[in-house]
Length: 165
Image (cartoon, rainbow, N blue to C red; front, side):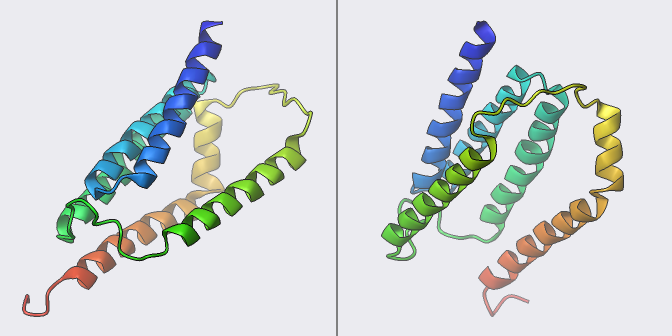
């Protein structure tokens, strides 16, 4: 009973802070709301009994990706004052695209799992997940790390003034 309550409470926190991360008008506040969202997702993993995934969530996403985002915000010297996130007048189009994406994903999820219960015979161990990550998914992992590095370098180059050498 308490696990279900914790799961529901963490799910509400995830949804609320994810919305706050998206609608926040200050970039640093949005990044901090993202930290809370990802931390609550790690809590959801804990309630589901996936301790390894919870630690990976904390170490990789909270510890690395959000730090990368915060460093990119600080290094690019972009304006972080209020209203800096409003760079275009396409808010209504973005909301529409987000709603359409949500509806499409929800329809796909419902069509795939409608009325089914997933039974897990043997839960994944750290050894099995590590073996899968470093055999089948190692190329994707490395490509993602290079992509994040390239995005950070591109952000620095694009925001650098011409008179700097």
